[in-house]
Amino acid sequence: MPYWKFFKESDVIDAISPGYPSPAEEIEGSRKFLLKWKLVPRIPKNLIKPHFLHSNEDEERFQFLKNALEAKDSRVIWCLRGGYGSNRLLPMMAKMKKPKEVKLLIGLSDVTSLQTFIIQEWGWPVFHSPILDRMGRGVVPPRDEKELHRIFFGQQTEVEFKKLKPLNDAAKKVRNLKSKIVGGNLTTLQSSMGTPWQINADNKLLFLEDWGERGYRIDRMLEQFRQGGVLKKCHGILLGDFLGGAEPATGKNNFNKVFKRWADDLDIPVFSGMQAGHGTIQRPIPFNTPCVLNVEAGRGHLIIQTGGRP
Image (cartoon, rainbow, N blue to C red):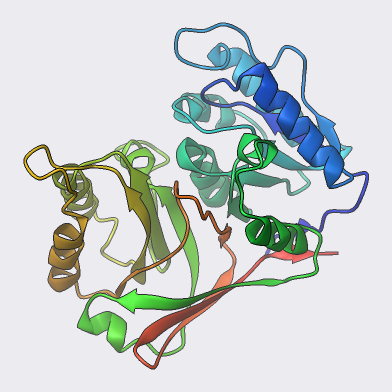
């Protein structure tokens, strides 16, 4: 399978902004962070321009992405931030010729659109991982930053998630489930439904996370997935952080009830407890790389290959 190459000091890192803009101070923080890791940041001066929704016009945002994908002197593309806009670039990406060299796309949230396209159209691995301006703002816990550094520089070749909670009988019976992970932000994935780039979870584990969505909206999105056939051949569901979404009447969310309903209703394994998403802890998840899931002592144990090589 295609693999990405471990980082080395002095590697060029292409920064892109496919969705919302980052303010100047956060761009500068991102630059300083990459320098701290002894990497070479490439952040175009005209990357951000005034726009009523995005960091730039669609054509400009795509051109920066295309330049990064086709650059012969870099192997990594790290998104400055998420925010709506990535899916508007997909029709233009579809007209591109697949690059010869694998580039590692790093990001989360709305970047899910680009990552899903790259997985399904080009077969590359990608990383659901903290965005660059978050690293630059210094809000990533030191332990998590060290893990990212070990992974990207090849000192750690697996990502391990322990103590996942099985939510149904199918999950409790999991033994040596070999698969790959796809998915990302639930709302973003829903926006792919009915498009040429609809999420394909066949024979895969589907990771989901979101923030700010109330329980009924999460339920509705999952129901659309079911009716659209996304879950028909899915190996199982891995739930990351779901934050916010308080009900007006109670001031609390009802996520647990929503997920219990779905876990009881599905015949595929459903697990919660992935420390990934929009929370304080955003552990990295390699997508489209081999993984193994087991249940040991009543808890899920997931080991994911990073997909990197020297």
